[in-house]
Image 1 (cartoon, helix red, strand yellow):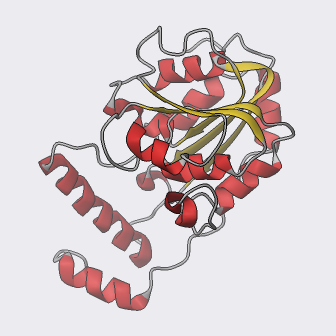
Image 2: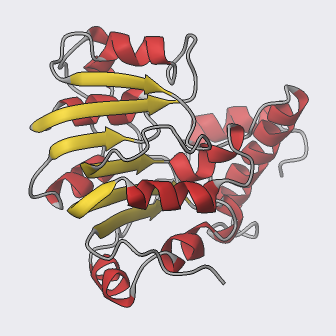
Length: 251
């Protein structure tokens, strides 16, 4: 069993969701952010923050970074393991934050024990990070969570967003659920053929991993404030009909 983490002087607020929420945003610091950074999960997390101060986006993408750019932070650091082009690259994140002040983008890997060593922040955000960490640190979710908790100042807040594996929340006997699971199968097959990770879902024991790092007091506080996701909307009938033409085995 994992040992409870020693950093008891922080709070943890997390959302485990059954589907990635869409982002329909407003303009802020750059054209990149015009359609990113606003969704129900971010809004819920925002209501739980009293003071922003120094903020770390521990696995930044334009969605999370654009949301954080709208907050009254003192400093904002965005971490990415990719230093080329694309949504999660250092170049892409620099473009998204080009007009903002006191923002730095830090390319690096949490697997490296010297990366941001000794740095602490008032707010640390892990937006789908624990499910995606395997891309750059195989089987590293547990140790990565330790590093994130170490990065939170006493009295600070760790914000975690995670995607629960669909197999735990969907029922193949339900036609709508079966459609989603079939789409997931196609996606997984395509990702495997391209030798790319399929998604950023938490490991099967992901939620347990989070709870086991918390003290009894932290668990009680987190459970009282845990995200309660709304039911997802049924797939549009026209879209469902088209998907069925693309997935031969779907009933």
